[in-house]
Image 1 (cartoon, helix red, strand yellow):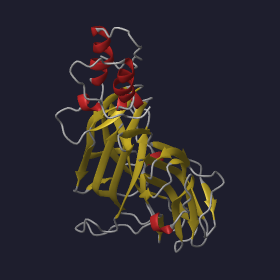
Image 2: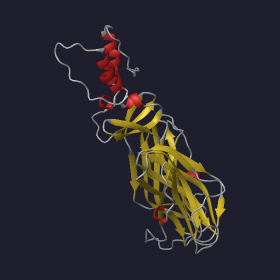
Image 3: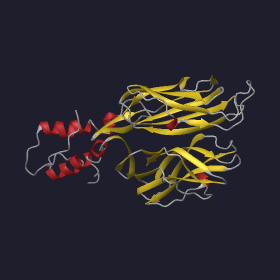
Image 4: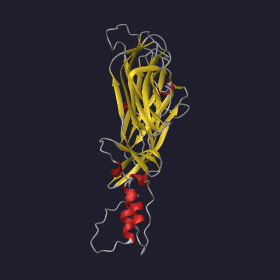
Length: 186
Length: 179
């Protein structure tokens, strides 16, 4: 049952069973203690006026090197999380980035799928540019820079949403490793 | 109304309307659903038996703008900035695309606080780019947890500087999670 604004009692009025059930039983069942499930380390957020629910953050880390020559965003294999969100979520992405060509850019962003469709965008990308090109294929961190950015996504459809990291280059061959995505759903 | 420690009922006592209003109505209004005003909010303690609603907020400025200032300054479009109600702390994430006219110059982005609290932008929590080819474009971010804030409405504003030459900044964003 939903929350009902608690009634104001008046002197000498009879307190009915219906009033108990609506204003005490049902309202107590809307509080954070009643909503706390058996799952630990969740937290509470509002879903509207006088309504709350639990949420759980999620993350995924990939260590290995992936390469691309694509100049449009393409998925980084395995670098995604799927979780239940409301209409907002804070997303953090981090990645090590290098390019085979000196002064050529490598970029990482993320897209959303599932209940919501949002394409990767340069507006929330990580970009590495202006460095020497990597030359040693056996050295995974040759000319790498690792950095991160955050984005508050506010146009989600509530439900199960998947956040996937993607990469592209300005030219040359990009190498991407140690990528991390963390999502805090609101 | 504030929270009141729930009364202990005594056998044979009459339960009055005043007691209902204090111990049931007013206490329920101090719970999370009682405090919730809209979706996507979080709740923090702000004292003994007291919670407050907080709103994680982002602001962005996409426009490419430049400065040659060697001390932290605003760009033509100030910010971006976020004004939110905070307690004594807030976590701030800030990011920007940055380039420099010089391959040996630094470009820096930091955050200042105004409103209930005054904190100047500082290199201690800046995002710094240095040693990249001139006119190359990098986008990167940083995070800082501000403590010692004066509770109330605080405004967090991104600020910019260079060590030499001209720095150009675009796709700027700031996210504040108030506590």
